[in-house]
Image (cartoon, rainbow, N blue to C red):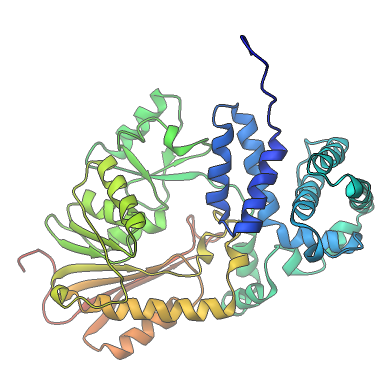
Length: 441
């Protein structure tokens, strides 16, 4: 570096280790931890960021499998190891197993360097011995035999979840669902129809060197096979498009929005569905539980050039002034998020049978409140980004049994690995008395 001492370059593996430790110690979700960590190298080359992303995401999504391998070869169980040592071992075994372009000698050498850099010189030889044992186990086929010994390890997914998916969808379909978590998928964006058509947006992106294909389901959808930072894509800051999965777009399209419809979104952040509804002509009020969440809605609406009312409100608390006020109410309730396991690599580790039951109860509580805001003849949309019946179909049926004034109009369950989109559920319900086709009907 001219004019001064050259700054030492931070190793990609050191950045990956910091991100994994953030998740380990602070419980930070992988997507947030990775985003924060990548800011440290935002001016480095694209290959550097790609390496860090793959190492963090791979180590995270294969964590259960990696721990089983380490427990097989290490004398001290993974759970009893120090966090830094545990993370170094996990990321090293992931490289040995799944990053073919990284030489084994580089993996072992870098593991030793990191151990010394973090003042674990005394354990450096132990770590080297464990990794050499894993290396020999891979060459002998022992590691693969261990992994293939159970579906839990093969898909690196907790046993309770493998069993639940198998019970609900059968072994063949559940295998496809679980396998899809490890498959690369293109980024899906929603064209801002107030600014241009999808064809015009695709042509604009092509001029800027970005190839965009047509979506499989959504009318406004485009797909981009490989991207770096979304915010650096041409047209993002100008509000030409938003990032949104096609399943989520279909939900908004299923509402049959017409110009001037009054729509309330009770769990709206970060505002993707609210913004699409506004782009289609709805007069949108968006709510969420905190100022931080509503600020994200405002920022997205402003970027897209949309006029949306964003308010802080708890969706579980009734607001009598809103009773029978809206033509359409959207309740995209909190859920286990198991439909997006492939995009949020650690979400399967945060879920449990108990948390699923609690979330299902919360969803029903929100739905009961939201139902009061729909005018006679209006539409109520219930949705989640999960694939378990307890949170979806069973919750909808429970609500309908309690509310005979509503009838089911349309119900969809999308499954990742089977449908060309994320796992997602929605149930469109109509409140009796009169049709809700126009604001003055």
